[in-house]
Length: 399
Image (tube, rainbow, N blue to C red; front, top):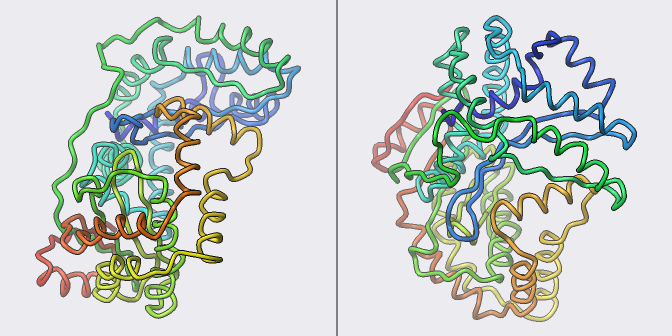
């Protein structure tokens, strides 16, 4: 069911309710609110597990909170999930949008695939919003099974699974809470099936993978379980990953290699590090640069002005200014993954205290990247077939 979770959420605002068809319901949402849109959250938790949630994000003026509550009550209480004709159009449109985004966001495709090989949260994300979702929509074609969406709805649109997050001025928040909790109070207490609250998953086999499509460039990703390589999470990892992105990968993969971009991302909760390139004319050369990253990082002088700039940049990412709605989403996310203010402050303190020895310790674990089988490439068929022979990779057609 996971590959259909996002389609279910999207359908809530696009298919209408028992009292209104989709066009009238969409007009009502536009006239009464500042918008209702759906999204998803899939993330490793502080404890190393997986947090997965569907988000229904709403904006509304203070004097119309009661109208929003009525809309949400209908949307969650009586959606027209049996409207097969409308559902088919929604599914085909979603599949088309995903296909359009695959080439433009190929770096996210390969990065998501290597993370799916290394941690259950990555495998869940791959199923919910990655290639697993695309495969399900493609298989369904113009005849999606509405019973799947009704089953998801019966088990997720229930009181025991809803978390309500409000961002507003103090006086308004209390009033809005009393109105909006009536929406959740009107839902069934629990689902029709005994689904567990916590999500577990199995990682995909870690082996080199080539994905082909109508491309002239590559997206190249390699991942490593830093925890398995002996690294203990520390705030300095933010600086290390950022330094690799803006230093080594920028110069060797983008400037010298000709790619449009490259990045390094590390999650302290899953322990997974991933490097990926964007619109990259090279394949073998980029993989070689990834393998040399640990040596480069170990040799960097981390003192004086360079140290100060790195710390300022890392703190700027950690504590970037946010609009109120984005701040509210950040607080909700931290609640769902178990991240406390104390943990965030500890990370800040460790960033400020970062030394050369911390980067060397990160580089020592990163050296294992060269032997990691968590590798995925999206690119033209001819070059991937040539590379796959020597890399022992399997090749699949994506587009």
